[in-house]
Image (cartoon, rainbow, N blue to C red; front, side):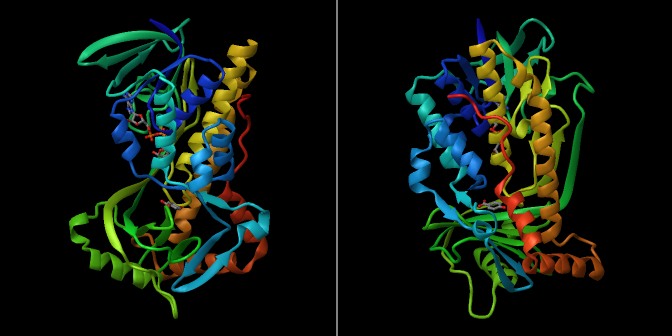
Length: 394
Ligand code: APR
Ligand code: PHB
């Protein structure tokens, strides 16, 4: 069997790409290791840049997003319990949108399923070969049986642990990686909002973040070590630590029922190229950022915007000029997002072993940020996101 485009992974990258190509009648098949329910239930960040929102709308999949999303005009910054608002909307005319990534996935997978799109769940890809040949071969396991298929192109949208990157020959693509001695303990809480915007706080005991999902569901995080034991964190201990890091005269967090707790280590990783012959890498398969700044989903959508534009141009106009620029354009944007996510992590977290000079300089940098309009404008531009180089013609 041969398909024009084989997509590995039905996360946000793979499902959005399949949906967009479908709008222009370009056939694709999606292989997904897990079940639809599992992919839809995965809790990830929930902040979308304006361009990511606009791409969903442009692709005709933004109705529920537009109805249910929450708009935030800026962020609040805490420096050892003093609070400062940075008004992105006033500075640059754009804020950010809150809409959980699991909602994005539900919209996309639901639409693909209603349209009868070929998404093979619980069907892991085990290998990709002939990247440089006339057609690429995909090996996958369906119902315990190994099968193969060929395609004009294969898109590795299979996340950090996927099979597509592993299929590359040694040295095929240069990669960079950095781990941090840090983790985030995240909670989902049934409670009303404590603030109208996300609140990023530096505290001598470590970073904390107050974010939200809906008016009734809040998301909060605490910096912990990267080998933390979740069992040692009772609800009371979490609330007390959040209060210590975030509270201030006249303001405290509104508590509620904690219905989920999770831990995530912080990591940076990226590929210097996002194409190898007939294999294109998109989203987490090509880059992982630490979560400070919530760039994961947004970078994935930026990749998909350019890649879908390139594939549409290739199939409808017999012109490969965008496709040929995909890797360069994607990496140029992603390396800047890596820089922002790394710098934003360094700004707010207390690194183990840091001395008092280093911690005081971190505070001084934040003090500069909250008092200088040019610094805030630059921060606002980075937070709200870089442009997408190409948009799919739909
Ligand atoms: N075969 C088929 N599917 C696979 C394989 C495989 N060998 N390996 C992994 N997958 C699937 C995973 O089960 C997952 O559903 O690929 C999908 C990859 O999805 P994500 O990890 O969500 O990555 P992506 O779609 O690029 O989305 C990026 O998700 O990880 C967050 O923060 C990140 O917000 C960002 C977004
Ligand atoms: C989230 O809501 O999960 C979130 C918000 C902002 C971030 C990271 C995560 O920077």
